[in-house]
Length: 255
Ligand SMILES: NC(=O)c1ccc[n+]([C@@H]2O[C@H](COP(=O)([O-])OP(=O)(O)OC[C@H]3O[C@@H](n4cnc5c(N)ncnc54)[C@H](O)[C@@H]3O)[C@@H](O)[C@H]2O)c1
Image (cartoon, rainbow, N blue to C red; front, side, top):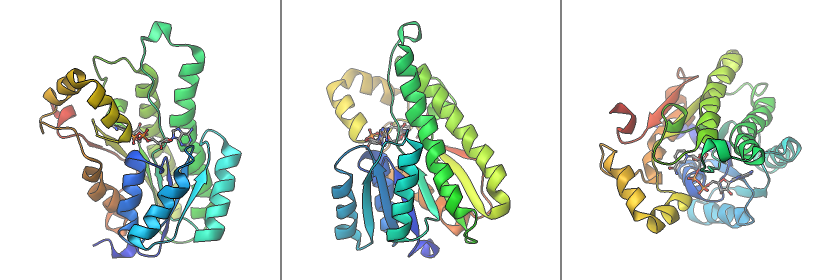
């Protein structure tokens, strides 16, 4: 069903680990060549793992997505090494908890910078290449259900606001780029077990139990639970679907 993905090139931000790396394996499993962009120095070994496990071309670039010039340089390098990207997944993101009245200005700015600016800069570099390429292209932003609902008991206003903005950015770019055949959608996950959250839930089993008690599916999502939706959005099977944020949360927001 996703045969049209084979041989294409994807850029995945936040791809060194966590949901970004997991989504990169889903793409690599379909024969997609992948460029991973991440702050972490392990990004090179993550890319090497994609090559050894899936036989695709993969590269890792150590980049801070809040630096527009560095993002653009990484896209230029990926383009020359792997070909023009026609797929984008933006998974670089951070969460910082705190009562809003106490959150320092720098913390607020940092969350918005990584989650929103970083998504926009990657989309810009992607659009600069995909808009003129004359082939179908698809960008998938990893937003969050927190862009639509407010989690509790943890306070994370900056994260929630940033993810609401990421979802509306997807709609905005989708309208702007639809005439050029470039689609933009967002996936809005609920509570998922990533590298980051797995450590956290193991250290805080009571909070994990509280979260799980509110999820109709009775469990947190596994990274693989995103694969089918991501491949569908990436592939031409969804060629008339653009500008949407799709929540995938085991029923959490349906209650
Ligand atoms: N895990 C969840 O429950 C969940 C739920 C909803 C949305 N999300 C979103 O999914 C995405 C991935 O989260 P995760 O849970 O896998 O977390 P994670 O911490 O395991 O992965 C995030 C990755 O982004 C990278 N990153 C962070 N700041 C960066 C920067 N400035 N430049 C480049 N790379 C940077 C990190 O190094 C890391 O590799 C995030 O956008 C997160 O908000 C996660």
